[in-house]
Length: 78
Image 1 (cartoon, one colour):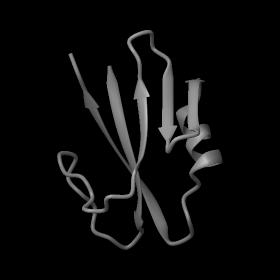
Image 2: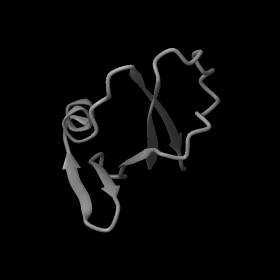
Image 3: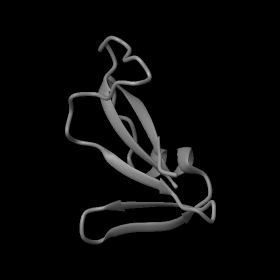
């Protein structure tokens, strides 16, 4: 299983090393299940399953605001 956390951070922030996450607590969660399908949950009602294109999904549901950039960190669980 792979879980990804996605942030929209200020575009002028210095790049973060791959092993660090932004200090911002506002992130979106996406998860790749054992069967290879992606899902995302946002709040009580926002649940999407069987996401085939994660970038297109993020662009549609969580567009990057002007002056910000997307940072994604993925974590794997054996």
